[in-house]
Image (cartoon, rainbow, N blue to C red; front, side, top):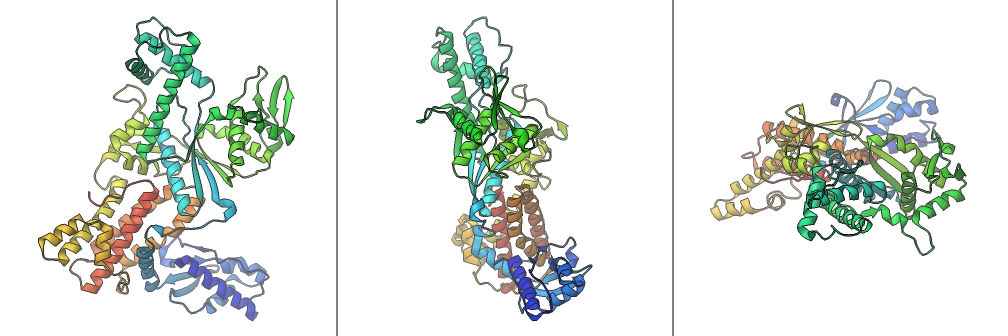
Length: 578
């Protein structure tokens, strides 16, 4: 049981005793409601239970607080409980309680901070990126790749069952525009005098794709009937771009449980209907689909939207919203408890109609949209507009090529998704403390180096020292530090500060998962690394008395475990050597 849970239990027991004894007249006992004081000088935890009970108990909050403090059960985790301000109860933890965090981490390892959620909220569909398969991913897609993947990892650690999904926009006019673009470049490369269509994808990647087709298939499509050639080149280009997306994301460490093709929504099933038709039928049965001016409409104003939305145009053409309606209905039918979509901030105006859609089906609150702001790309503080290689926009894969996966991920996750990110390429490439991901990874590597040094010091033979160099940090920690090491000597302020930060991790995970805010882990990782460096500077480890050395190695090892876990939840590596 985590320290917070133990404290909550103690406060709840004190409240229950007060009610049983008649000291408090409460029909219902409120939760302990623990929070971290803003100023660490006020203690480790604070409870507002007295202030929230005072009105019901017809008492002054400070009187209620005193009653609670007087009835706290005997325990070994509270060093003091002080009443402050209008009725806060501030708790200071014993050194033993914090030392217990170190032991718990070394025992639980990668399971440290794991949580649970109610079964009815557990199964989540998380859809993100969903870039059109008609061109390279831009750096904004890279941000959403990092955000969605880290969100899924954090939510799983908190107890959710997360299903990650990429919606492939492979149906509609953009695919025909893409095909026309490839076809024009293909014919141009074969020497034909062909103009690019007025509406086209004009990037250099289309020319590269046309050349790849010629290199592979030659003039195979040159004399085909126009419609046949159009379809053939569209499908070749589509497959090539989709494979590039898959390959880049796999390289980035972002994988999906399902790549959902929009085309599947238009496949006729055994019932003779497409998924789009079934979704509209379900909405029509609810009474929110009607015909007007030859078009088919969804009555979204019934649920707060500013106007009703067209599903089928007067010419019979389906709108994008019709696809989105069918896709979300499909997700509901697959049995998810909650749907989370990550969209670009430019889709903000689209949210209300989708929420109305869910409300109309009878699933209010089931859809949650997280908006991701774009990325300002900089180089030494100056805006970067164009790629050095192509003279066009810098693509996601070019950024990863130059900066690397770890730095890209960490910096993309360094701020809340609703804030713009200034991503400085040169800062991301630095191998010093000015680069936050390097700073955190260095702390992890430093602890691994410490373990190797400790192991080498323990032995005298060169062969044994070589073995220590070859061993993993986990192996070294297991060999050097007893699982039941005496941690009672850990009482230096730097040690206590580091242990307090380690104790923050379980709550961090719960809140980051709840708020869909993996960026908090980047801040936590930097703070934990900073506190470790302070501990390392202030507390002599190697050469200390044996008992002290083992305890401090245990604290360093617990820090290593949590640093590695934090980085893994961000999708960032934790190197043992740098």
